[in-house]
Image (cartoon, rainbow, N blue to C red):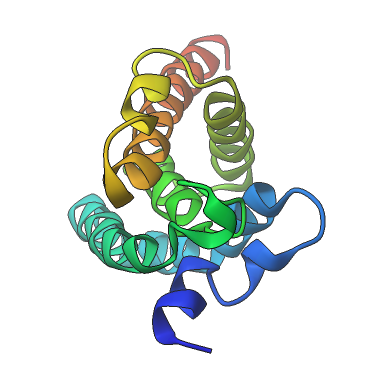
Length: 152
């Protein structure tokens, strides 16, 4: 198997028979844990940017699978999106669960401009909508955690 395929499917997560996007998001959790372990939001954001850059290259090579621009097997976009969703969140199970659920919801619902970003040419269309969904999830998680602190 080619390196681009291994990365695009995030080491096989995208080959899950059901819900490959969710499997890819779960596959991002070791990277999220590593990013949180550094205790540096800057390094966490840099890791997300690195996965985005690798994803742009890997998805470019595999975006023609099955004649689809964004085949379900390509899940490195979910990995990048989940990393974005967790930048600067406090490392906890609550933060992780909140970011995971919000990211999956925004990734599936594709609020503006996610759907528009999905139409971009080449691998930018594969990656950009998930990064935007990650940003939405991050902002929503930050807000919900702050509201929760008010009532604690």
